[in-house]
Length: 127
Image 1 (cartoon, one colour):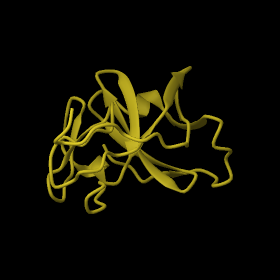
Image 2 (cartoon, rainbow, N blue to C red; image 1 turned 180 degrees about the vertical axis):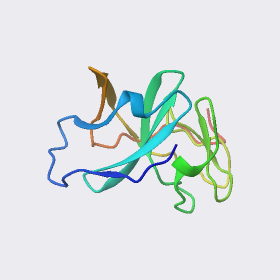
Image 3 (cartoon, rainbow, N blue to C red; image 1 turned 60 degrees about the vertical axis):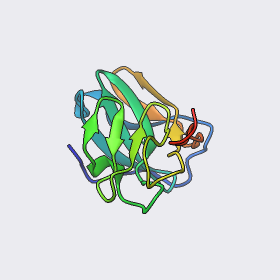
Image 4 (cartoon, rainbow, N blue to C red; image 1 turned 120 degrees about the vertical axis):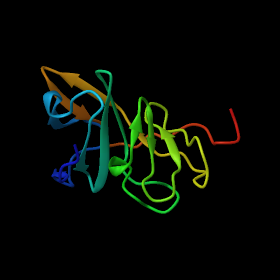
């Protein structure tokens, strides 16, 4: 399920979590996109655990939320690079740069993200 990004104010302090969606809106295996502080973030539900990463492939800027998913792995719909949504790690070429991740929490059925990107870890040719 891919929806239009929910628009949030660009003036939100980067040190506070921002409520972005209801947990029920992202079923297991699902994804949604939200816009926070000028960034488009993809929120994935992997077996009831939520992960948030940049919605843009680091190779040629395609929306990862539109790619196929298998567990923690999302495949870029443009050239097939694969990324782990839990770690941001790029798992296959042609991308070589990990995607950024965002701290996420779920409280009272609401998903919130910290709009400060965290560098993804790992490249396809390194452990």
